[in-house]
Image (cartoon, rainbow, N blue to C red; front, side):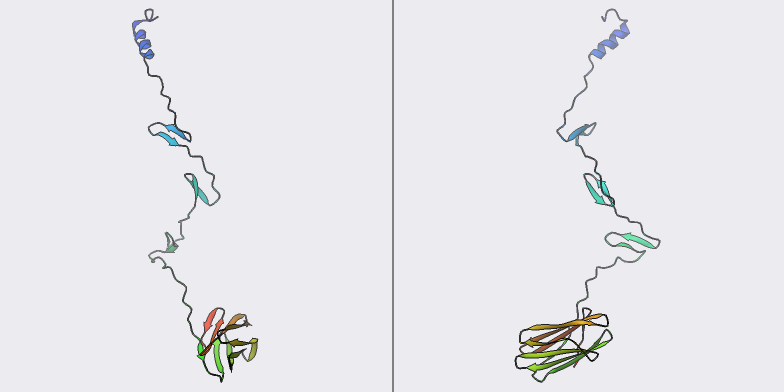
Length: 190
């Protein structure tokens, strides 16, 4: 056959018969061949819920770092005034521990003014403890309590839209009264 073709075509046909066949590359399961990279993992497309975006095989939250004029975005804080230092993490203020101790068998009389109301506490001594009473603006509140040594009792209620809690704790050497209005401790005075 080559003898019948013109000489230039005979050379082309003979070179084509020597051409290298295409190479078949088998990659492990879950991968595919990419030219100049070899076998790479197949990544299925991920559908993410609203408010997230695909990041490889998982979804990550979208973060809007745009801020109104005069503010700049600070990672971990959000938008802050331009030139302002990032806000420091604030710890809750420690509750001020105040109150009054009274001892003896004669009785206790304490008062406090909190949330626009006057609180009066009367504790009459007993042989093994105290009998306590709470008045708010002259009106008896809650039930009177008897507190023995080592016990704690509370008188709670509401007045003028404010919640109060009087804790009466009887110790061997006296009584401790702690009054809180809306969760904030009020200073008691004799």
